[in-house]
Image 1: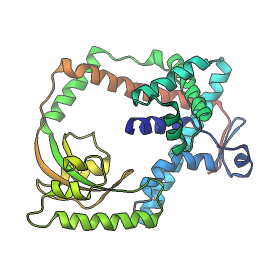
Image 2 (image 1 turned 60 degrees about the vertical axis):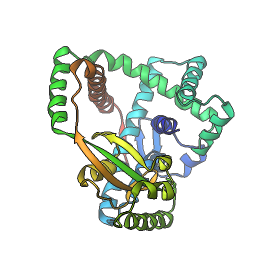
Image 3 (image 1 turned 135 degrees about the vertical axis):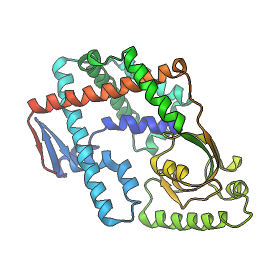
Image 4 (image 1 turned 180 degrees about the vertical axis):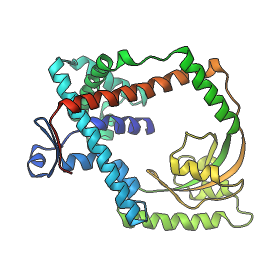
Length: 323
């Protein structure tokens, strides 16, 4: 399920306005050649990040982060409009069979064999099957455009890989990994501020309970956690940096062994974290790391050349920002 939601979040980058009428009454935040970007389209795209920002208590910091997210998201939407224009100009297409193959691959990756169940999951995210297919088609078209315009520039040499491995081994050799447990108080991503605050107070109470002398955190997790790891006493096993979300990771690598955190907010709700122990990270060999490093470098170089490509398109286009 997490993979499906993550995938859906990724492909939602292709989503547009939900109704023609909304485009007529919405405030226009940007014009890209002959296309417009509406405020509702911008807010829809920025919604996941806005949910995170709403948990920030400092109103000034919340306003600053909101402004930055809207600006970054608008730049992304402008880039997408520019690429859509290029796709049309170059005549890049995708067949219905290719779209169905991609949809089937998503279902297979998430072990969803029942079509009705898949449609129900999409409906929970505010999507219909035709809309989802359209999003998949746009994803295929953009991939093809990038392979044509950006792909030839992206190369990873053996020297690049060895330099990346040297950096990896230096950093990993100095790093540790943490064994932690957690208790989750679930909060819907679309919950009202009042519901979020009520859940936070509940989590604070559980955190205080967890700090009582002699308290068995694993037993408390089995009794109070609302997450899937409750049956295992909230056990997360060992994990390294870069695995968990930023707020969760910061707490995990700041706490001392045996300490319990304050409630931590993620998209799933409020977490109470306890660090059980930490140990030095074992550095993997070059041969073991080579495929991962190559994938990472390819992604980084692709993003770099993609940014350059979008800037080139933008310099030749008529773009008016009204936000």
